[in-house]
Length: 527
Image (cartoon, rainbow, N blue to C red; front, side, top):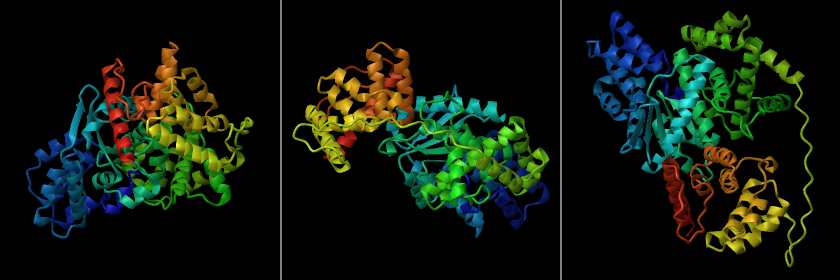
């Protein structure tokens, strides 16, 4: 993702060409190169000091001042600098000026929240997202520590995050083309020294924002470690690896990279480690992006298993000095093989490996037909689900439960169905039936945020605080603004006022209030 902005022609070498075209003296060009490198390595304080000691008003110094402003999150200052007519026809300045202009529009009036203790700077496009900041801070801090442990890269403080409300804003702040974000489902970009990501409220069911944040922070660390010269296969492969290394393993963690890569290789649908283009976010379909991510994840895990983590640190250091066009010399220096040889070794490893034997599917019990109902096919299940949602949305919980219970009996491993049935039963005064309908985590076929919210509630009522906290963590990682998640399993029947009982913890209480605001907005939109 972070490479998507190569289409703007802001390559590392571009500013050097820019300086030379505008007649910078040799000494000044050397100083400007040092400033450029400091900014790219996210050492903004050093870049600022170098600029202060550079007693010149050349175009090169103005360009770097604008670039520093963008990296600092001050797009307005960058726009003012780049609006100067003396930049003429410079394509580099035009591209950065356009980015500064759209970024200024998208972030105007944004709320900046700083966590000085943890070195975090968060700009919220929507102030209603403020209750999410403590959770963002927790993840960012843990991810930064994991990256320092795994890669030996210490990220500077503050770490900057922009939380935006929609894909239009994501495109405006980062420069990623909107159609590319829509095509591949991009929800976050690491560029310009910060992470820009969608608010979980921007998608109907949230998204795995925690692991996404860790992924993008890794991109920043790799840019710092290699002076933004790591090839895309390394960038994305290591970022995928670091997505989950900041936390303990969780149920439903995706471990299928080898399987997806092997299947794509055998079926002729492989994207190719060395054929990713400028960015995975710019691939033509979501399927292509999914295959590409699996391939780079599998490849880098194979490479690390073969060479060890110290070799990765050496490779990053060599890339910093040699550049991404020199990836082969860096690879040969560290391992004795170039990229082509490593790809062939990885492919042979994939073909020789076998997928684990799939777990035998549990038989689905035959569903007895409800009296007077003709249930049993997909169309009827869909009709019942839709009718149950409509009834619940109008405050008729018992009727909603009657419609969905036969579906929940038959489709007992689909968490969204089990959650719907349990939710309706809870608000019908049938708590024990609700617990049975919700089912157990090990019986579910995938994760679903609100399901974890109700699971937390039932665990808390049973006095199992550890299980309750575990369920909250899982739900919050997926859909923190679902009411069941934000309010510890408490759910409000549409058309009725929420209860007075709120989480005791003030941070969770704020999240609960925000989640109920989201629920009210969704209810209003349905009217």
